[in-house]
Length: 43
Image 1: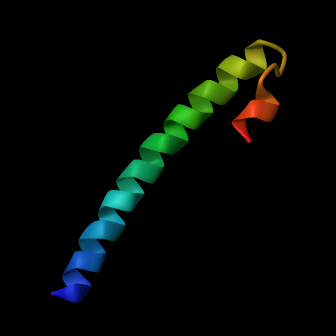
Image 2 (image 1 turned 90 degrees about the horizontal axis):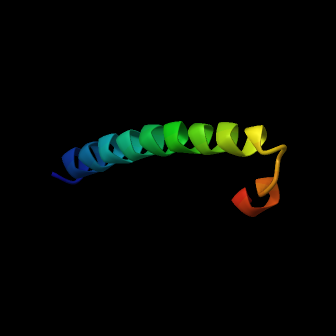
């Protein structure tokens, strides 16, 4: 049961990571259009 729970959690983490990556890419593109203003705030 522990292994199954870890696999399920890993799948959830991957889903959230992929969604976060897409959002971060969109935000990065928007900030790049604004000539990099706020690029320091992302970190």
